[in-house]
Image 1: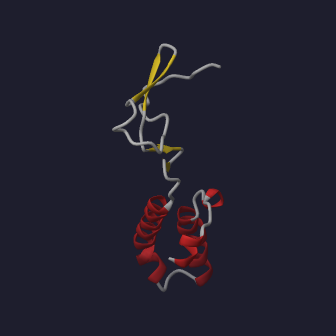
Image 2: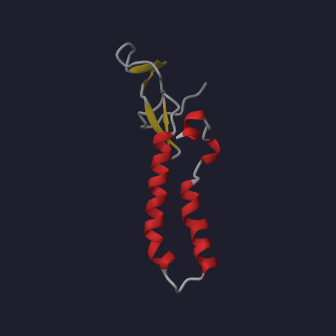
Length: 111
């Protein structure tokens, strides 16, 4: 096994309490900090596999995109097809980023 080491301190995630277990995992000459959550490829990974915080960030980002384009979407100078294209190109991709990896649960569908 070969480890690629850089300056990241956010490697293993554990469900176990930090009070009981050490704050670092040792693997040969390397020490890795144990964390409850970290950002990987722009998404937050946490020990509970809870995506509510991540979806809230995506909703906020999509809302910010919408508010940034509000002037153009309300304008009478742009056609309806242009406004739909702006939505499809700028807002929808932000909202659905990595949606295919989301795990659907009963809690999500009821809330």
